[in-house]
Length: 115
Length: 112
Image 1 (cartoon, each protein chain N blue to C red):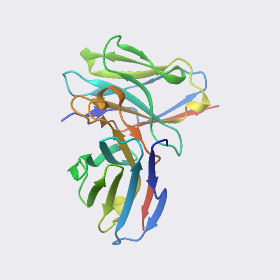
Image 2 (cartoon, one colour):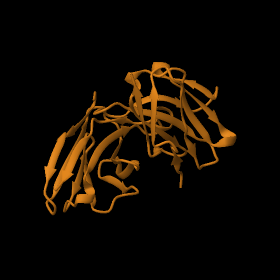
Image 3 (cartoon, rainbow over the protein chains, first blue to last red):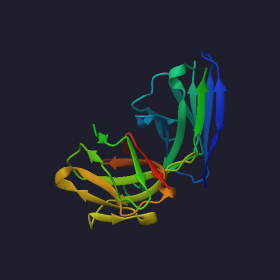
Image 4 (cartoon, one colour):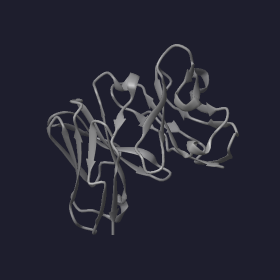
């Protein structure tokens, strides 16, 4: 989508291996979010960032870590992938004070399969 | 904590049928409400939003939603669905700061 790029788009990995997903934005938005989407659960927040080096946990953060060393990049790492982390991962961005009126802008997603 | 319920997980309709998807939220204060749509294989896109004013909100592609504060509801409607409306629909609520809470989603299939 315009302004947000997620990579890779698809990945298959083995249980126990580390995996890093990347979200890159060109909108210079301060807030970035990682969600996972699973049937019956909708979107659940994993981690979010409210600025460079400022991150916090969401409701399903166990097994995940994040880093944000630059405004434009927000990385999601699965330290040791498990089958329960097979999901579609979405990145989203927003500006302070705008989420209430405008919501988020979402990336195209990364489909991760852990075998 | 805010929670959002979408009671219909799967809906199957024929073309030209009317649509209503339910959304209820738990927080009783000031809220901003959103409906997102996700077409097969695509990312979420904003369909419509409410943050003040007329509780009947009109969005893109003929969709509308009505905010009923007394019922904590923000149901999505469309008078006549098309095959191209086949998608998953998510309700979301913002009540503070920059966080949105999403419902579990409703998968709509429209049969031609």
